[in-house]
Image (cartoon, rainbow, N blue to C red; front, side, top):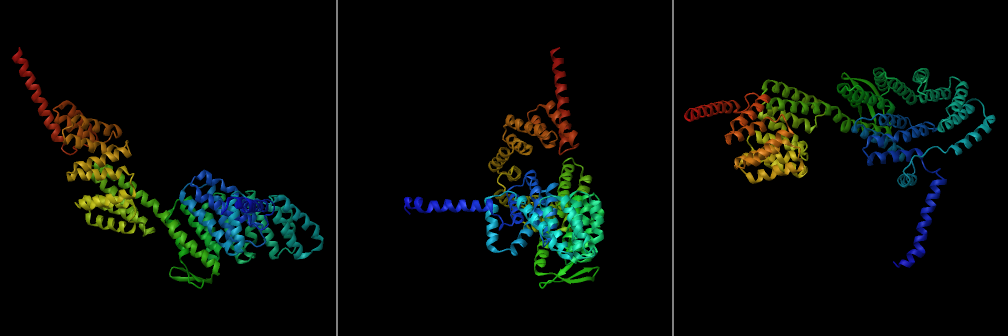
Length: 595
């Protein structure tokens, strides 16, 4: 295309289009779902950053979004509870796993909103959220004009129609955070036809005003008055809010009971299902009671739902509830179940798995100090922790890998190999699982297989000093000095503070007669790890080879202080004593000759 044609005809059109869109967004956002735009901005932030402090800035956006949602005429109750919990979670999030939960909550709300929205408007919302990623608040001037107009028309209404107008004005006041005026109109609405559904809804909004003011006791008092008089969905929502208030008051045990009771009363309602989820969430992150959390999450799984939405709840082998789920609620239930099984249950298992690996490390250190009985007890405890993790999450490949190491150290080589291979079949692209399989192979004498697995692990983790060190050690034992040296030097280059490769490189240098260089490496190893028994022992052998028996004894004694009777330590010390006695006798003989 001719450049002159582009700049003369097309470029001005593009500029005009951009200016038109900008003008439209700035001055006429009535087509824009501000709540949906805020949710998309929040999701985008969660995808882009894992910085918890940065994520916590989203709380302000989510709180405003909650106000927008609660002041809509047709309430989306599941959206409200998910947005509210997202805001709470972000405020005090302390684990990255919880950010995944927030992304799920908000993503599910966005999904449902977009299903009920014109595709053209959905595309427009996404465009605006991407082009202008900031919070959309209420248009105070526009809302104030609406309130003024409604106030001028009140004389035209009476009875339940007037009650509805009072409610409409109250919701608008809540949207612009004028809670005092909102309260006045809600009290008027609740006094008209006091036993009507409209009056109970007005009291529900009054309860929220108390909640916004952190007067949780008053909120609970109002909710208890109305929850059994509201339609099922609003009743479940009121019960959820009661549980949330108890949680905010620090009464977590009572909150859990309320959330569980809400689910049991009507388990096919989406808000009820989320209540049961909330009970598990509190047990997992607040009470740190993984077993209780698992039980709560699995209670949701006890709700059996077929593809047509027919549902029933089983307890103790008996059917205790039967009902049905609407198509959209069925999708949400399936997504909630998937999130629990793919994200929450692995989180429950992770604590036990991590504990198992910690115990393995402790047991290994006890083994290095020749405290075999204590090490055996510790390895058995580790095995129990991995087994508990698998009870919660049977697909956890890392727990099987941990069991393999525990069995290996407990000298059950057959089980160790079986578990290591099972772990690798479940998670073949994990360098940790491959390294553990290689470790087991090497321990049972399958050296070539061990080398193969370590090499595979290195392709996945090429910057792992640990993997290079392990391969270097195997090559020493195979007698491949060149490969051993190259891998140990790679380990040192990747992590100069890693003590173990210095010790093994020192051994290679000593075996070649390069005693001075060997000494430098052994000394570097003990300087990095003052409790490195093997390096002291090797220094002792080096000085023994050089016939410097005093220094040899000094290094052997340092090793003995860490691990008495280590390897051939006693024999060396015995030989040194004999050598030093011989030197003393020779020196005396020389003195006698001289005299």
